[in-house]
Image 1 (tube, rainbow, N blue to C red):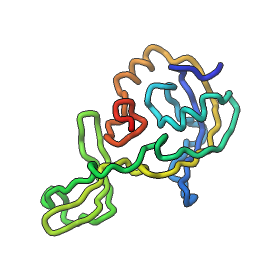
Image 2: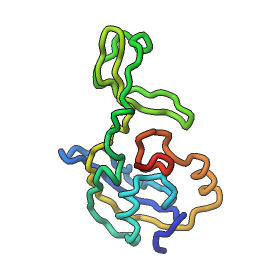
Image 3: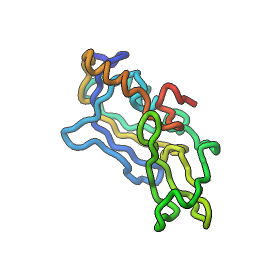
Length: 167
């Protein structure tokens, strides 16, 4: 079966950055499953695997504009220092609750009375290098489609993979 809109796709993958650091990969025997063309993964990954056939393996890069986009200055904010624990340091990662779920952010700077945070997706501005094997394609069930519709988008304001937040 070829990949088509609303296909359930299963891939084994690894993801590295320009510096060679591996930042994500599927667990052995547990491929990543998603419904094609529903905004569940970044557009650049979908574009590259669309023509693959089950059993194919390929390596490719996804530029920021087809990944998580470029960082947006308006997603950097200052929050009163009293809202954070005493031992907070620059570089620490936290999560805030938003209407669509958890929103991760990074502490950029800690001052006496305020903390500078960055709500951009941690992979904004990064070129992503994938090694992907297509391990399965099938028609998505009605239940899977309903679940995908109810959880559309990641809830992260800078996620280029979310249909409602595209760059």
